[in-house]
Length: 237
Image 1: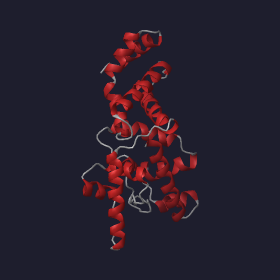
Image 2 (image 1 turned 60 degrees about the horizontal axis):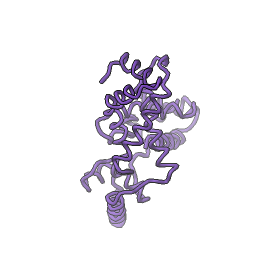
Image 3 (image 1 turned 180 degrees about the vertical axis):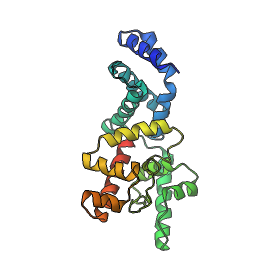
Image 4 (image 1 turned 90 degrees about the horizontal axis):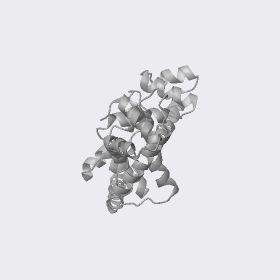
């Protein structure tokens, strides 16, 4: 990987029209693009995702202000992610793969059977183990198939489970990418919702303690927290 100063120099050259500088930046930052692309596994063909990631990366190069005082990767990750999500949302080109449809059907049948037997709804991790796949694949399949399956993350507990563990714990080893995206998602929240996240997951406050500080009930905090986590999850998916 290029050093920070070298990256800034190549960005300046690329912004001046130096095509070789653009190619060098793409080559050196290919692992970064791949790390973001992996989050959208199964939603498009891999080559299509990489192409969209490269477009987002080049837009980041074109618009990055070297006087920002931040690392280029911090700026590039949201740009790459945004390009892919915009395509999936606006162009209607979500090509659901056969495995996702098949997995969604299996999950629906399995959870229906458990319900008939009056057994507890399975967690994402339990479903992943049951069907031999990753938790992220389960979540994607459930969204694809509109299967009614509990994510077992109602957040009504008092154990202070880390936010990252609930939201991105099943997405693989790219923790730096996860943290960048999580930070950007939290920044977008209204002040009150951001305060709840900070108190609960960065200051280890219980729901009762947060409720007392906000002047509301613990039940209200639980409901708000559920909505906030769902909002962050949607923004990061």
